[in-house]
Length: 473
Image: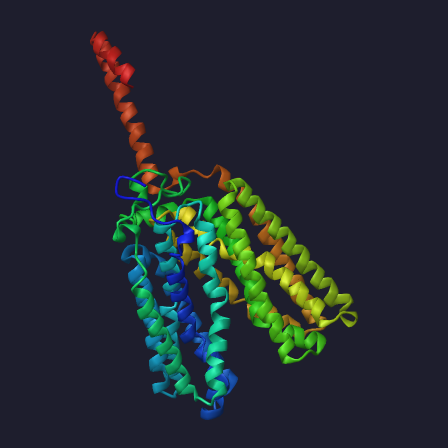
């Protein structure tokens, strides 16, 4: 509790369910194009290269909005940004089938991708106000399941309509309408902060960049300096950003190439290859929950050492997969390769979910957590563009072995950054932020002024007053 009212309910109260459903609803529209691509190519005569150009252009156009979306969320507010983002995705999906030219599809899908930049930073912003800092890991781990499982659930949902013969235009209308329904249902339950229902906001993590003062507990930055200076001068943030970009790339390679890898290396059926793909996300979800639980139970240094341990295990898994593909591929079954994929998933997706969620709140507090989350996610997206290049190594002799050797190198680099993060995070100080610097230098100037006043009074013989001032100083 606090002066402003009673404390909000604990995590077990279920406040995380509405934003999780909200974020999952986004994928009912976002997954439409992947499900509808065979129907579009059949009806309109386009080939996969045409659809690929639509995807590539829309991906490139969303990079800058993705990097800046967190700043918008921090200034506008979490709930409003969430509603605008989800509504934009739904409207884009509903308008998409009203044109058949490639330029129209590119324009509408770019609109969908840009709108998709806002829901996750908005959810991080809302969560920063509702949950105590020692619950944040578990809360955001639960919420992260909405994007780990949301895409797969949406594809299964849309496949039902394809099975019953719906066309590609109807598929987009179904996806967009379903998202609107979930938006209307969830907007009634999501509250931007506990204050809107008479609760006091829980205290922030005292280790955030703004400290634990009353000024630090504000929900929005006072100006651009309070966004730029804390981020640009905090070494731990940049080290974690580099590690996150590596994890993002490894994850993207698995998402893009797992089914082809299993089919080409073992000749398995599409069904078995898809099982391996689904298990990658499924096992990763458990890893996210496990690491989120540890994040709330361990000290700051212990949490960082766990990340190092996960990085070492991931490197060993990828190295083992390289060895198997290089020398023993003729002697193993597809199920052994799926087991190795699942092990890699456990050690990559757990650490992957933390930087853009709980770590962002820990760095930015309530003020700039969305900005940090969006920067993490945006830079990770830039790194993921190398996925096609890495997957292209599979066309060479022993190609898949080379792919996993490259992934092992990336994982070793990530592990080294986690080691550096252990020490940098320990010595980083929140005085690096603008507010901390201002207070620090103001206190130094005040002390100098008092010292000069004391010296002047001592010279004039005002001993009693000087003695009093010295005691005050």
